[in-house]
Image 1 (cartoon, rainbow, N blue to C red):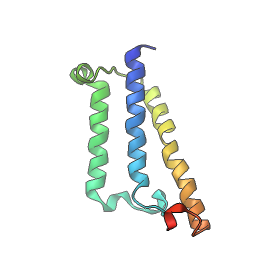
Image 2: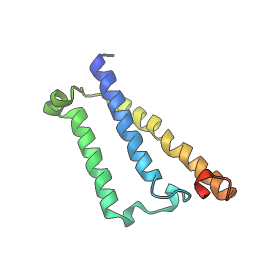
Image 3: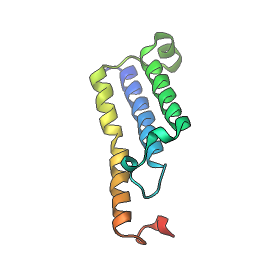
Length: 109
């Protein structure tokens, strides 16, 4: 694995973590899966644009030169998505706990 591939993978992991974090931040207690993403067109559009921009940073040659990145295999991109989704799953567990035990979370104050 080259340095550019590691840099691209690391950068992409951080970006995708933030996409999942944005989904989480829509509610401190409600599950992401109980809320419709389609209700907020600005949010949905922002996620779409962010995905397109990240894909261009990874796969468009002149963007590779600007950001010092390199294309990564699709299997690696899918793995990055799976690992970055841990941000979502850990927060879903926290939200579940807060819903089951109201008043025990520091956020409940």
